[in-house]
Amino acid sequence: MTRRLVRPADHRVMPWKNGGGSTAEIALAPEGADLATGFDWRLSIATIERDGPFSAFPGYDRTIMLIEGAGMVLDFGGGKAERIAVPFEPFEFVGEATVECRLLGGRIRDFNLMVRRAGYGAECHVVELADEPLALATDGGTLLIHCLEGDARLDDAPLASGDTLILEGETGVLGELTGDETATVFVAALFPRG
Image (cartoon, rainbow, N blue to C red; front, side, top):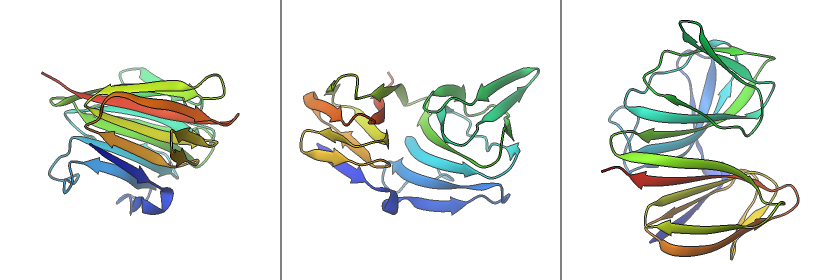
């Protein structure tokens, strides 16, 4: 059982080769994995400065949501497009898709979860903790909690805006996730397939 708190100062920031933005990597599993050799899951925040293509990640399922800026349109070709303009609203798509991004009003930041489809599934939710505390339980998989805004707390573990709590290998009831009147969190439960 492990619990790991990742703060924004811990993120690994990587400029894009095409100059169109950068990615702040929050966490990548397993330890020692990288984008070239493959990974089980990756949590990150991208800053997109201009229109352009998304990198393809064949074999991965992606969840993306706007966290800052006016938004973007993702063009999947063949007349299929998705407008991402409402903050904290997750959108899922497959990593092998050919995607062109068009910004709606300048620079944006988006939050990303990528999960290797052959090994894992993910259930993702955005929760406003001012409405009511969230009881957390897990069956031993991985639980990712990212504080999008406000201040949250899982028992004795405080989470400020931008902090991420990673829980692995714990089973049963984990406690209550609470927060102030502005606290909004992204919660992802990752489970092995097969």
